[in-house]
Image 1 (cartoon, one colour):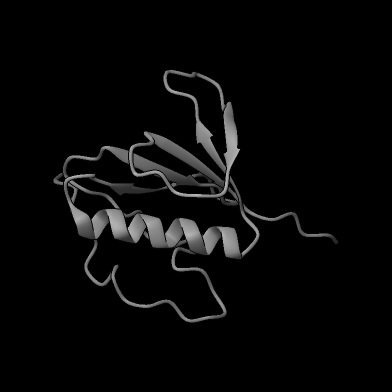
Image 2 (cartoon, rainbow, N blue to C red; image 1 turned 30 degrees about the vertical axis):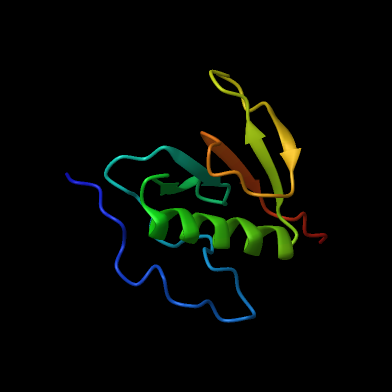
Length: 108
């Protein structure tokens, strides 16, 4: 299987939902240098980028910023960590290897 950037990923999102919502297909690139793992009810979904590919990096940056606006908690994962340990962040750094996007808590 060859990983490719999904067609249509550069379309503008509707204002009432994030660019990258739970249940969407993973965004994969051939040579990923970074990844956002988006936590969801059915597991984590990856959104990858390649620093040498401006389009995939811009998509990842836009998704990151949308997550922040929607109340997600973003964590830059510590390199080499086998556990989910990271530092909270509010700005995108394309040199990061991995982020974890944690959806906002919903009361019930």
